[in-house]
Image (cartoon, rainbow, N blue to C red; front, side, top):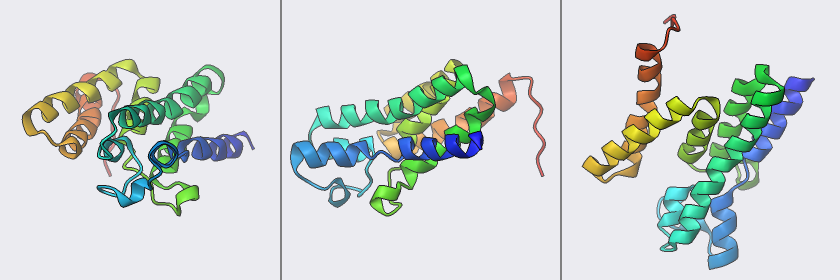
Amino acid sequence: MEILIISILSYIVGSIPFGFILTKIFLKKDIRNIGSGNIGATNALRTGNKSIGYTTLFLDIIKAVIPIIYLKLNYTDYIFIASLCIFLGHVFPIWLKFKGGKGVATYVGILFSINLYIGLVFIGVWFVTFLISKYSSLSSLFASLSVPIYLFIFTNQSFIFF
């Protein structure tokens, strides 16, 4: 029963569409009609209002950090299922007909909550790629790919590939 409650609550927290809410309140616009149509921080920056973009980024990260840190301290067995549910909540929010953001900021919050070094690897690769390419999406892809590579090379965990 605990796992069901934690999964549902994690999904609900993850599905809070901060980019949608902030642009609706402060700009009186629907973020889904701007830029890429996503509700995330990158598209919130495309509104032309940097404070809304950075606030969305912060809130999308924090909506992952707070529940995962709480679970890490109280229910360690459920950290990974909660992380997945938070991420899926952001990408497929029930409130917006399952059309959300890409989940990069929420993923960063998850990584930092689980392990600080993994979060730093992601951020480092993201910044280097962004400085070279100037594309946030490409930077996110490379940074996301760097996490399992880092874990494979620099940790003592064995992986089984099927």
